[in-house]
Length: 64
Image (cartoon, rainbow, N blue to C red; front, side, top):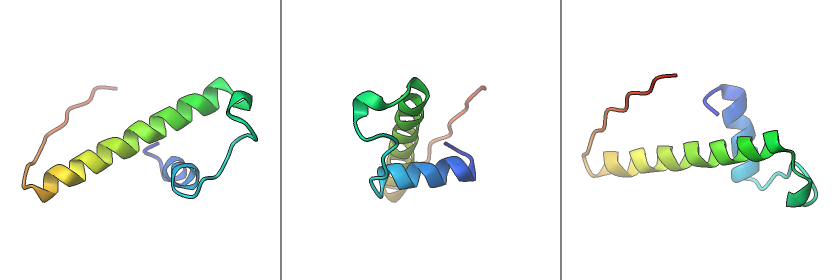
């Protein structure tokens, strides 16, 4: 989700309603995992923006 391509695809899916399949039951496990990760990433970005508006700075350390 952090790559430019991943963010673009996430925007198409989340913001513009692009569908991977006709019905949710037709989604593959990889597509479901991508959608869940994209949604979580977008929610994390929104939370960081909200905190920044309140003047709160968080430092996030992640090991990959």
